[in-house]
Amino acid sequence: MSTVPQDPEKETENQRLITEEASIHASRRRWTRHLGAVGRWTRSTFSWRTRASLIAVLSLPGELFLRMLKMLILPLIIFSLIGRAGLARHEGSWDLGWRTVAYYLTTTVVAAVLGLVW
Image (cartoon, rainbow, N blue to C red; front, side, top):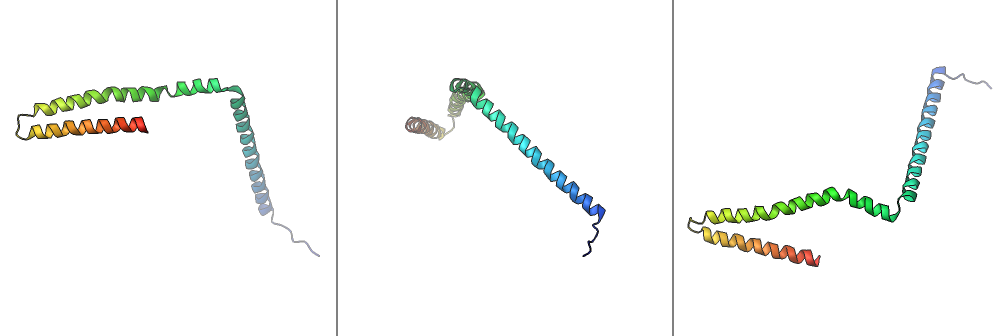
């Protein structure tokens, strides 16, 4: 029984691949262990009270943005209606103006009803 000698370059390449794969798995295990430790620390450190305060702090920018949008909507609508009324000299524009006001009031009522029901 004779043994065929292996190619030394091929053998070193195989060893390199095995070492690389082991290194990747060790790195994954290390990161998983770190993430688990961070998760356990977070869960044990933050009680419900501190979580609620953290959520309140993080939701502040969104709340400010929505308030700014609400602050802009009413002046835009009023000035668009006033601007439309300024064009009332033309024939037929009163009809369009009343349709605009009716549309605005209708959509406002629908939005209010949906806001209360939903």
